[in-house]
Amino acid sequence: MSGLPFSLIPHRVYDSIYDIDPTALREAGITLLLADLDNTLVKYGQLEPDQALRDWREKLTAAGVELYLLSNSRKPGRAASFAQALGIPYQGHSGKPRTAGYFRAMERMGRRPEQTAMVGDQIFTDILGARRSGVKALMVEPIELAGNPGRYLRYAVEEPFRLLGKRNNRRAL
Image (cartoon, rainbow, N blue to C red; front, top):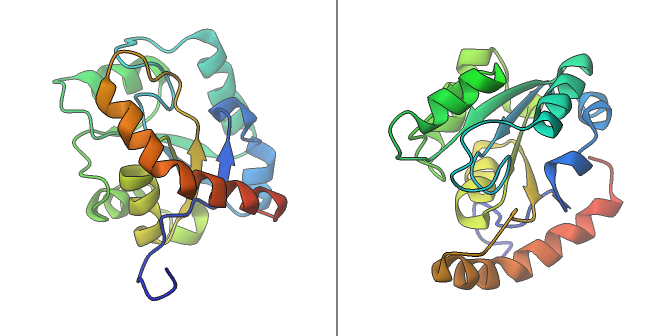
């Protein structure tokens, strides 16, 4: 894989977003956390942030890390209404893994790639796009697989990259 101009291996793999320490992000120089929506922050179809997510966002803010919703959702208004309910900026139809959405978000927030991380549940969109954009790629296990047979196949294909990413967990962020 060393000959490729990008990597599919996440910098870190977590069980959930709640295992990501906001203070550790800030200490690593990360001040902007881009986040996927569905199966990363909440279950597919969940319309409102729950209290745990609101509390985690507050911890990020207290640590000096801004949360930004970077979603590929094609459902009209999905990203906008969720981000508004959580009180964060957003970008829908981001086109991950293409890099343009990542760079638009960083430009909007006045950040550079070395100040930015992306958290998501999919290798071929969230992680690939983050790596191609030069930002830290943080992966979480999907919140749920139920209901979509295609997800089982996709996550099975992604598993070797998740395992390689978990080896990075021993290193500094």
